[in-house]
View (tube, one colour):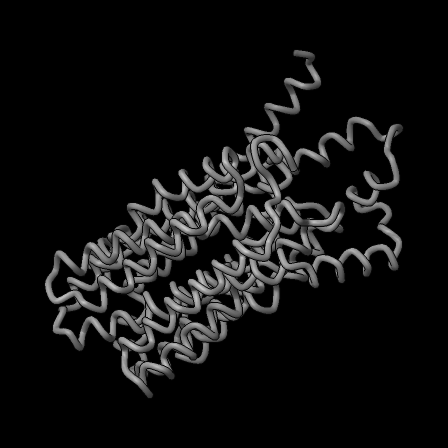
Length: 420
């Protein structure tokens, strides 16, 4: 192995490792305030549940409007700089939230923090896509989901513990500290993506397409527009995007909104529902890893049907649950299904991204997720109000199944056993 190849591999794996630490720190910061933010707003400012929902929901709105611009900026100026920009905006918002003195102040800065968080997570996905070869893309991209899960598991435990000892505002300070640590690691330890390292070493041998990746020239406007139209009209873009949308809609609209309300109506106490939400994370660690492996080994479509079956079984089990063990079984099934299905959309979009437009393509995927965040909660909530909780969940399962089957039927396999 030559020195240049060894150095490139070292940069690749160092970058992936550092990025996973950065994502885990960021997710732990967001997770630290998740168990206390509603209580803090209620007790500190005396606002209603609807007002609390607006504040929490605004954080996800940034995903809808910033994902594509973030992808474009990462394509034009490099991954590390835009990743740092997102982390800095998120840090600013978190710091201002920690010193909030009114509901309006907290809500406004929470909105800003959501913008930064959306930029951060979009570019993190693009970074991992840069570092992955097609043969290892599923496994490498699944590391982002695993890092998020790690942060979401540790953060709430830390935040809840500190709130019990030091008060409800302490986790807000902790979030800002963890966001600052994340930004510091980006600045001092994260290398630029592998392709920019390679370009810096071979300036004389650049081809036009390579130069466009470095941001010095771009593809002809006509060629760029044509590539985007072909992408957006392709079955892969439409059906994979819809499947990714439904995964997020199920999580935000069903698991975090309708199901807790339905569980309360069934007679489950908040501690049981909290345990149910927490237990969904643990099987996701294992099935997320499995999803990356089987998609690299057997094809990108392989995890889709098992994911649909497990999630629908989880929804059905929840609807019929009348004791704690059935409730927890539904959480395990939902977590397993989401762990298999969630990385699939990212890997598909990474495969179909036109050369030189990887950032915008990943940004479009996260826009689908943003739509799912908003539409899932609103649509399933409206159905629950009109027809009842069970009908809302059955309709959610039916649409999720239809999106997955559409992907299986109409989308061509993008990778299998070394063939792209």
